[in-house]
Amino acid sequence: MDAAHQKFPYRCLPLVIANQYGWEILSTHRVRATWDGTSKPEGLYVENLYGDGPLHCHSHFGEGVLTFQIPFIFKTPDGWNLMVRGPSNNPKDGIAALDGIIETDWAHSTFTMNWRFTRACTIEFAIGEPICLFFPIQRGVLEMFRGEFRMLEADPEFESKFREWSVSRDRFLLGLEKGRPDVVAQGWQRDYMQTARNKKPIAHPFANETSSTDLDRSDGNHNHLVNG
Image (cartoon, rainbow, N blue to C red; front, side):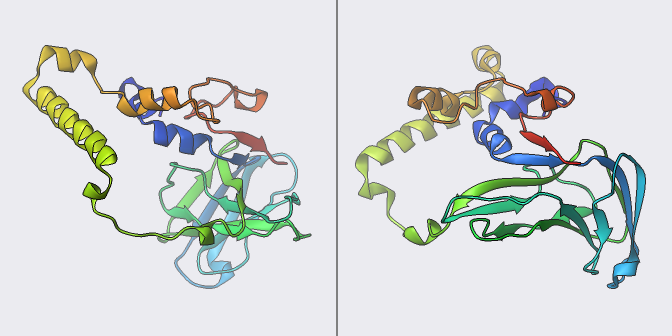
């Protein structure tokens, strides 16, 4: 995000909030993994290029799955699971993170973080690169919701707000297309950002706070844990 032109991804508040949602576990080793495209565990070769301590990364399941053993046991309150997945908005060429939900209110074992190759190739994880992201989710909340379709006209106040925004958006985009100096100088509309500020959310996506583990990495306000 920092490397993008004028750091424009930071203009997308939903993107920034998602990047801050959860904690990341970082690799303590530089790891190279090569998959030959076959299904057996031996078809994936893992090399420890650099790093201190034991390497918690190997080929266990086969099918091009690279496994990181997470050497922690997590405990959550009753009724709370742990969502475990790859780092948000951080795709990696040649390999994709697999998601899992762990019932950490009763589980008494460690778990693995798994990545699956998308093709036969070689990839690397650098020291300090995120290998896992996790956050708590309350069990049963999804079942409390029921989706339904409604006509926009069913809520006149909501419809009015949408129409006003839509007209404003079309006018702004047309101004950019035609190169109107006042619109070009504005750059972007900030509607979502300004409204979010007024709502004063519990989360603080506008804060620019870093912990001691973040000082060497500036990549969109991700939260990090270093795992040995």
